[in-house]
Length: 393
Image (cartoon, rainbow, N blue to C red):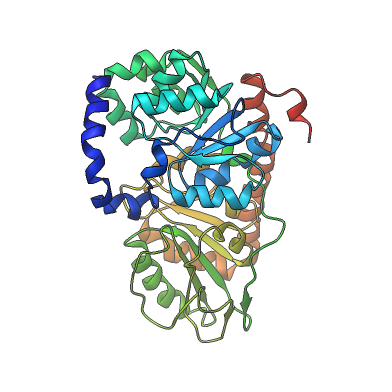
């Protein structure tokens, strides 16, 4: 089955440029550079692999604490560019294409002393190559969502690799699923997203007038429509309302009623603007600073699983998520972030806008829980045997 997977991947290569959906869903995916084994400065490091922009942001506590002993691979070009901005001194490159000869050549040349895979990026040839060469593999803050679990259960050949890897789980729920998939070395460490630190400097934004600001972060198709409807319903009670929408994929087009301004057009929002669309990459986490309320996208339409609420919670902002937050329900519960149905949004957000004390209590409760549950990166480094000198702050 493993070699059949490699054969299928090899046959598929000529068709990769046609797979536009990859670009829309996960960012650009370069091909030619993935056959290279070159990795200047990467040899002998702890190699951390993450998928794209959000994941590159989340691994920051580990990168910072490993202090020069780390190299990074990403799946997308977007992720690689984000890593370049966040970690300019850290060696980084795209993950090689998951063909066994290509991956094996890369690993033999780079010789990472450990491989840390953030969450659940499953690449069979990478796992086989690492185990064949005796390189320890750790899934850190490992998660196994419902869709991932169903998909991986079909591939029994992966169990032979899973049982040699370490699964440092974000929750007991994910740990149980990892054991069902064949992982033998499973430990619950917590969600690495909890170790997030808000930016010391926030992106510039000037909002004219005294306005209430709702930020919809990481929205997906269908959620802009919800935000638009909600805006005008709330505007009846709060005429100075501004709705900021940051789509998960910045190039995606969508229509909004009312007056719209895009961030690429201006960093100043005049009075009379209904919607400010953040069509820039990597700024959302800092823009939460300007919010009165935060609504986390990917959670009001099925099939996405939600997105990370910690970035807004860390700015002490009242934060809510939708009923389809499957991938973040445990984290939301840990942080006392309300999970609401679409029809509950209007009344709940209206109550928060009308009652500053209620809004402050919700924000303060989530912020306090977040501060108490940090320290996941230290637990990970301790378990992989890298805490030593790198653990010092």
